[in-house]
Amino acid sequence: MQIVKKISEIREILSDLDKNNSKINLIPTMGNIHEGHLSLLKEANKYEGINVVSIFINPTQFNDIKDFENYPNTFDQDVNLLSKNNCEIIFAPNINEMYPNGLETKKTIFEYREILCDVFRPGHFDGVTTVVKMLLNIIKPSNVFLGEKDFQQLKILETLIIQNKLKTNLVKCSSIRSSNGMSLSSRYTKFSTKEKTQFEKCAQIINKNLLDLINSFDTKILENIKKELQSIGISKIDYCEVREENNLEISNTNINSRLFLAFYVNEIRIIDNFVLY
Image 1 (cartoon, rainbow, N blue to C red):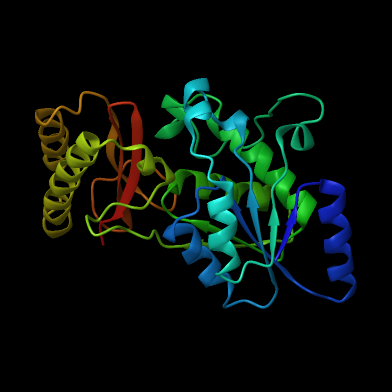
Image 2: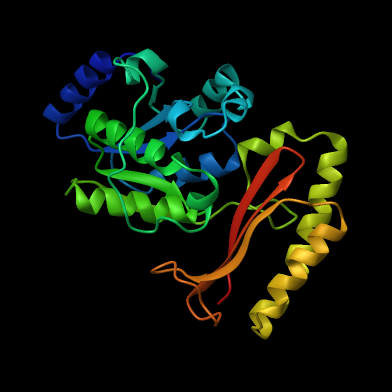
């Protein structure tokens, strides 16, 4: 496995691979590798090509500097895990390598905006699309593998690929969930013992109401979720909505729809979505 930190070096390596008609599979990450990331690698193994995992904690997608500073950096552990899971190249540039002219972003994608996380994290998706476009232009993968946990982000990046006519196939991968039914997240490593207990109670509330939504759809159940979360001390809930998964418009049915949730356990923001059909 190779660890590459320079754009010029990764381009040289990939150019040699291209001469041999080798395809590239890209899994973009911010590190703190867990089973969710490894599931993307497992999916990539079904496709022909060299598996490249990028590790870059992108500062421009954090609207809160404290969130950026506190994001878990576990590079050595990540390298160890990836080396055992058929990753052939790790691309791990630093901030100056990716942003040589200073931090800057552009708003180029206007679909699926001003809803869900975009309302509560201004500039976040501009940072995401900026860095992902950089990665796609540098690596030029045949396939890019993204999880469905950040579903709005997935839709926005799908639009990025289509809008820029990039020759990259987006492979959508189902969320990997823990035993409590919640999607895995790097942020959960920051939980204290008390926060873990509260998070487990949140999961129980969500699972119970999720079954009700699937069995007999009623928007009143959304209010139940919010009230029950508040009853255990969850004071900040960004959204609790059902949206149609193709266009992300508000839905009044569980057909082709998902429950979208974002709330805080103390300072840690939880986002997730759940298929209702």
